[in-house]
Length: 436
View 1: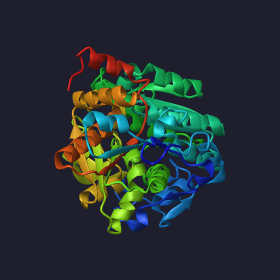
View 2 (view 1 turned 90 degrees about the vertical axis):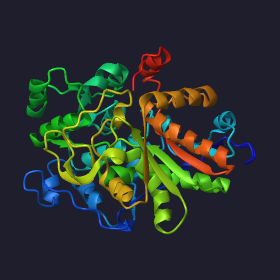
View 3 (view 1 turned 180 degrees about the horizontal axis):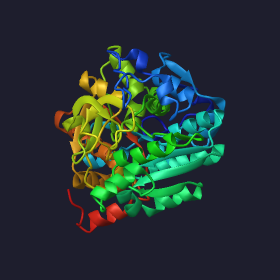
């Protein structure tokens, strides 16, 4: 390692990897409104969720334990790619001529190329422990589907993935990744479920949405005794598993003698942003000065344009009803390349913290985030996912504000995934064909 004055990467030894996830539930400023049964509208009990999830994950949904131990079997697989590096974007800083320091947590180093295995591996493990043979899920851009395909392969579980149709078309190699790891992949909406057939009857050319894909996956799981459902974002246990990102980042910043003034992440359902921010939001709840900013696309502005109210998590109204920022469960966003951010709602915990004023939100149009992604690639060398580019754009804007004010703030963002399978979007942007 070089001196701290020129250091680019901060690495943790495997022995320094966190052995517990951080659960923010007991630290929330107000209680989290309970999920409601989609039919009775009464608060869901464990028995209502049992057809979809293994009991250990249901317990994690409502746990009041501040730290939950990561099982050793999960830790062993985590160590294939964790701890992930914390990097300093020195070349970007120089290009922007900013006194700010820009740090990023590099979650693209996982086998699936994103942060998603942090919860996929854990969910596959807990399902295996309860004897589950099959899992169904949805995926937007394919990041979650490929991560869960990996997790299920490692634990010997069959997986069926309903992939949003526009991403199925735009990102064929994500589908190939899932198939390499043994999953079956369907372009949603399909004719394999009642909810899919209903959508196709109304709009045969529907590009699909995460809400529709969730309906199909939930319907298939609920109708089979040997099958459970897995969700890649939104739920409390998913945000919990992702906090290993922020816990590592905090330890790495401490090695530098630094602490972030602002923590940034892109937001679709909220898992990668929750993962990097919640360990720092804990400090904020205890009185420390730190800003947290969730960044979303302007075509799907849940936090910046949605309502904070109870809504279904899926298009057909099969999933539990949760209180969140939502654009309405029937909303189908425009087919932007950041497919992982095309969800009508947000994680209930994240939504509560935004509503209470502890977390900020911003939205950007597609061309602006590709502009930012191009500059990042041409300075730092990394081709990032369109989803991640939302966080990069915000980090750059915060750094430029520091240039104007002369403040040397520390900016930390989550590099949630690489864009090596998103080159079609870059190709369209370079050719001038990408629309807002």
